Length: 385
Image (cartoon, rainbow, N blue to C red; front, side, top):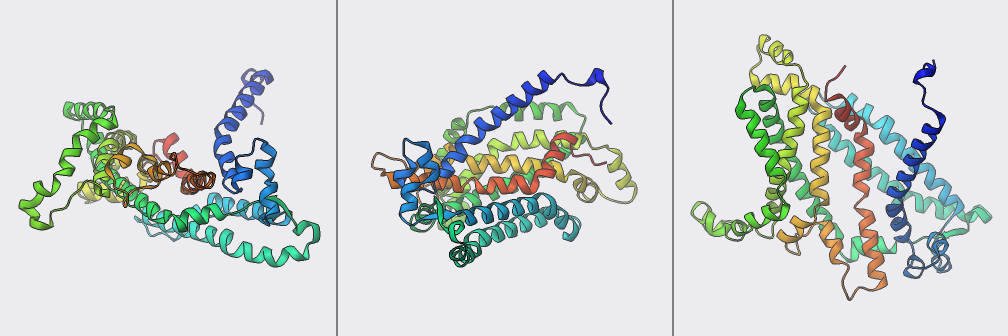
């Protein structure tokens, strides 16, 4: 059923709005697409002044490194199947097989399993299968576009980028876990409290969130450097030194992120009717049981949305991690920045680009897997029905 004529937009307005949206998408997507193309070429092709050489990679192809038309067709089909699975099939399976009250654990396991399966299919099975099939396809099996994964192998194996990845996961997991634990409890308490104290606590949290990150780092730095001396009366000679360790970054990033998480979760809890709490109390639940068994199942879209923002803050941080971590515990973003220096060769620059492209993969997986919950949390305020 079409909308009434008075409510229909003029075609000129539709054309303008759609054209602006398409232009914005092109501008936003171009950098990541272009560096992704560069990361699979030899330095001669990657930094060529001719954009067609960057795309087609003739020097890379002449070196015996490339993709055939059959490789491209099969790869696109496999990518489409994985995206469709992540959007349509995977969420339903997680909801079906995850025990009640353990949705977060179910999503974590499903996301990790999905990533492993996709990696095995693309990196393990597909190249082996196509190496057997391509010689049988004639022209379709000949290299058409130059492509090499040598830069990714150099980054992840030779440069030991896996250690930086592990450090990023440790910091991110710590920030998300602490932020959500404190944020859900504080947000629930503030949403159900009508006192003036709750209002002023939220205002103070907002002011604290507005502080520059460098101010917090400068404030914590002397404490982290002298942490062994401060904690020696408690832990003795086993007193830890926080400076240079992931725990220092986790503490600072939680301090930065916590006010925002409390504000966001408080707004979600505020939109959940208090009658749900009262009904649970009438049925014999304590305050915490009502929170855990009744409110939290309704809050999952909001919790996942808050978790995503916490993840992005910790995952993409450069200032705090570069100032507080030593070389061994460095996370991925400052490690990539360190790959660019005055002595960098063309090969090193392409490897740095490959590393930058690599760290975007988890972000795409998260958005694909959790897009239902993110949209629901942002638009419906975590209220079902």
